Length: 203
Image (cartoon, rainbow, N blue to C red; front, side):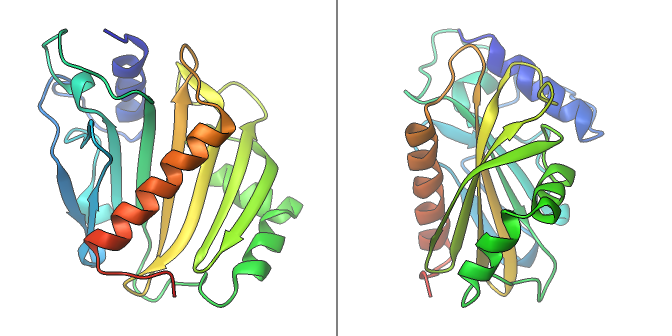
């Protein structure tokens, strides 16, 4: 069993102000967040029912095996904590402004905004990328990660969906860290899953 993941889930529950009644509660395959945004994950990932807050537009996805008491359950090959956050109605700002959004994230003000909204706290921007209706940023924690047991690097992606700004983040574990490319591939997979689930295209 990978002990780091249950510990990280417990830490996120504490940071979110949630009482972790049970971290062995079975995960859900999907959840519908505010704005009617349906969220599901890659094979082997489930929605954590303890930390996820649908009405607040927040979902945490992790290995389904981390949410059961059966130590023989199989973990996916790439372990990460994945979060999806849905903004307010009318908050969509990415489509058609990808380059401007990317340029802003590369400024000190952009880094400060990322730091304020990151589980890990203050971050430094290491790389940014754009695609149609998508801006991705790779960050590294300046100090210790806010979630014990997670690595200091993380990918985050911003996209518009159903008229709202949607943010996806992928962060690996310190004991089994993800490479930058592996983490990016998982981020891309999550974006594709969300677009299919919500009948959204890149434009």
